[in-house]
Image: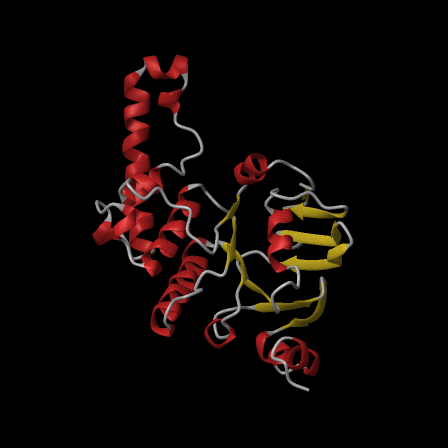
Length: 253
């Protein structure tokens, strides 16, 4: 079986700077894959290309055996690749539930012809609200569903972004620094939710994260990048004990 995501010889330049240099990664379905590395190693650029925010200079991005290289972000989103950000992109004044419902790709009540037949879209609306509450329970937000999003804690805001990705029928969730700025207890709690979602729903995660002390016990496979290249890959314990990783990422000699 082919991986759900394949990045093949991806290269990206910004003027004289080579941000990505022939990067190759494979992400297996129903896995949590980590991309680690020091600042400036190309991790976020890689996520931006996969999600369509940036276009590569060369190379390919294959999702579920389909070439999606250079597609627009909304096209990639509809295919099931959903991106979250280090600073959560929530709508502060809307409730948690409304934030989740906004992620629905298409609502029949918004189409001119179908909007006439109220019964069809009212039934659909009930179904998506039921789905939203199930997702809120999966992400531990069921008790704050009617709270305005700006009142959430930092950890809850991160979970809200995951909930919105699930509401958008994500097959692959790209996450950038999901536990940045959070204390270790909350960080572990979030990764426990991620692991639970992977197990229960079969969702695949590709995560950029610096907090190796937190993340290593949850991930299935690791890529470490430096200077726009992959310098090590494999299972977590093997990679985190690689001399190249200790030297470049952790600053050891």
